[in-house]
Length: 131
Image 1 (cartoon, rainbow, N blue to C red):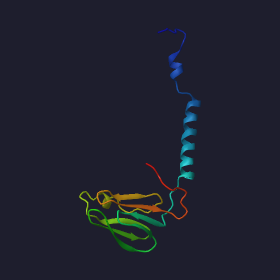
Image 2 (spheres, rainbow, N blue to C red; image 1 turned 30 degrees about the vertical axis):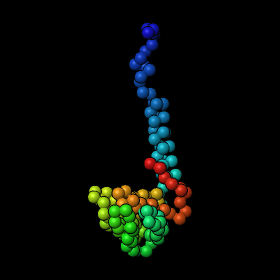
Image 3 (spheres, rainbow, N blue to C red; image 1 turned 90 degrees about the horizontal axis):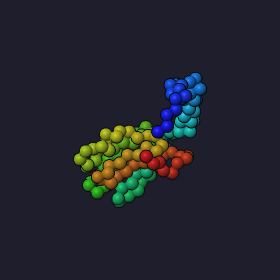
Image 4 (cartoon, one colour; image 1 turned 90 degrees about the vertical axis):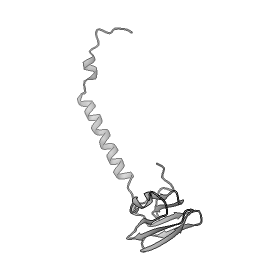
């Protein structure tokens, strides 16, 4: 390895005013893009899929829906533009603990019972969202 006696390593590792300015501008740009581009809308309907059926629900009407799955019946509740699992035959009840879903792109599922719910807005710019 070559030795560079004339190099001031402390000067190269020192944070300058320009470095701080670049970091602040990058954070500001990322935050403004997040706020302006990625805004979730209130969902207008829900797509419910199970092995036996595919349902489209309007979230504006309060209702309780029974959906048959492979382990039994899952009960979904719709109220005030929101949807949630009320009961399901699965063991761990993760679907119930996920709570109310109401934003465009929200997804919840009871995997053991093979019942899934996706909230959508009628003017959604996305056809699917990946995680």
